[in-house]
Image (tube, rainbow, N blue to C red):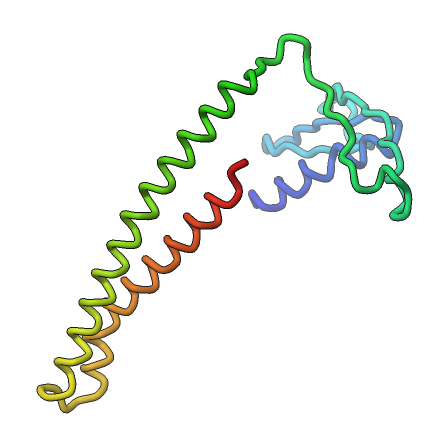
Length: 162
């Protein structure tokens, strides 16, 4: 029921824009709400104020000079701005923090690899059931994969800093 209402609410503004920009909220005898552009019972319906937006400009042709540039973003006059020196300082702080996290994560990855190697060497002599060996090694392998993923993510983030 909630999904239907969500779809109805999401589609309602589009239908309202297509049909005279009027949308009605109707409440039936059971108290259920319905949104429509054609009221079934005008007494139980009230018109909603839907603001209309002008149609957007067509996208530039792929070969045109403007195709690669994003259109300028209109900002309110009171929109806060950060000067370049402060932004550079923030970027440097971010890089330093990420590099510290990367160094720490690389140490944890090395420890996880050593622990996995130790567990792999133990399995050769003492364990005869192969599934038990796999079950015992799984948390160590997951730890290595998790730290490898963290290292890769941190490196990606560092590469994005200007």
